[in-house]
Length: 358
Image (cartoon, rainbow, N blue to C red):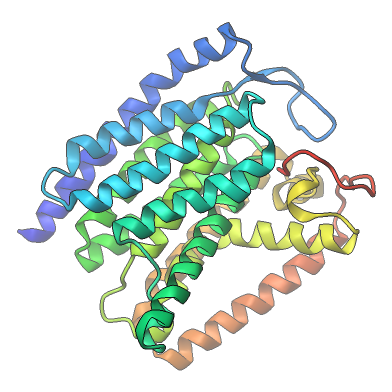
């Protein structure tokens, strides 16, 4: 009965977010066109015509409506903290899309401030406090929480560089967070993940190649923050603590890999990874190998699904097996970085850009 209630609650959250995001995207697109909020073609862009921005508003509203209708009996303090941080980043992202903020504000102010919302509401990492007693362990966990939120949010922000990529990867990750939450009886995580899945899929209908609207930083940072939050809250039942932290990392394997690839690649060329935008992401390189835009995005969807499946198996493994698997996957990732570094891609000029990377 309890399991059935969990599934029902998740389905309600998913359905509301899906319909809300799908329906709201159309008027948001009209408003973006009406007020000239468009992303224009440029040297580091893959689209050839101006595309409306502000799709993140539709994702945000679809998600929030679903949560407000689905979490009446769940702790309100954590909901307030999660919605507070998410709203802050959505607003900062929209302002950045409109050119109203310096790009470093979102990285060095917006993202850390959103992490503080989580900390004050009781959502935080639980790693160091397991081994370091007293306030020092709590402090270290707080620092890890901020780094995790900033890192994952930033990785989704720069993942939004090809039609349907960020929304689709978010949807795939949300599927596995939803499944993991149902397996572990985590009501809040399940509702959050299901609502994220619905909001991302509703928008994806408009955003898949050829995209009719972009989510902009308002949407990418919002989804990244939700992914970071789900990663902090997922608690695999029966998993040894020493390997449980692998679950969210594996579910978010594709954005983590893409961030690693461009960080290594750009650093080797004397560029600052997060301030040197260009067509050197994983999807760009796969596209240049002959897959095309749609093919590259679909391959990354499949890799995200495979990584998510492995994440669901981790709680069933011994610590030794889990770490051997993690080491093997890390080695495969390094080989993939070397292979993609040798693949054709458009290299940026050897100077440091003043605009945010994507």
